[in-house]
Length: 222
Image (cartoon, rainbow, N blue to C red; front, side, top):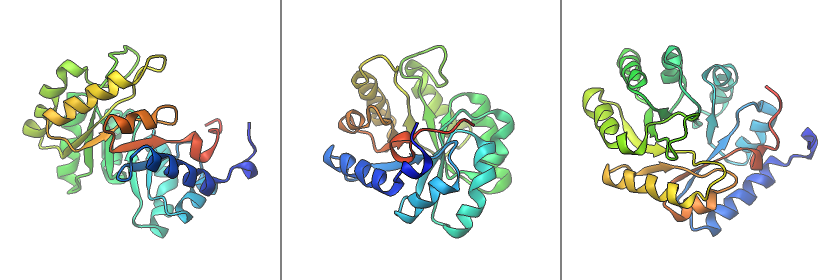
């Protein structure tokens, strides 16, 4: 494993940005996945101009981001990990984009908290694009109805879709399917593509990619 001092976050960011550009993603948003990394890694990314960051856990994010946001109020924080129903209040208070709306209970709790806090972070519906039993998300065949429910019943600000394709399969068909679901529901934001497949995701219409270890290096043990 690389040592802390061997990681040049700014250089890694520049390299990823170049690859995104080369893949035709001039307008693709880069979300730097900072889960398990502390301010010593996040600081150089902020200094290099990165402002969109992704976190998997509400509690971890709450412990490290408030002071960073005081210094950099233009930070945009994305929740990209599963949201537990008992964490919806904290999630609404802390995050600017919640990418893992995946069931009615969460939609209902988010709607209640948004009204209570008078704060409306953007919401993405997470689609279990490969219909894998171990993964969260709405099955593709149920996505249209769930999006409609979130919009009409709960008045959530649904602006996009997110997915994680099966690890051991060619991702292209899954990315194509997510883009198709987004188009027919009039959703502009498509969050798909990580370190191993983001260039393919861009080719299939990703508007946002989520990159972690290729920027910050190996994740420390939490």
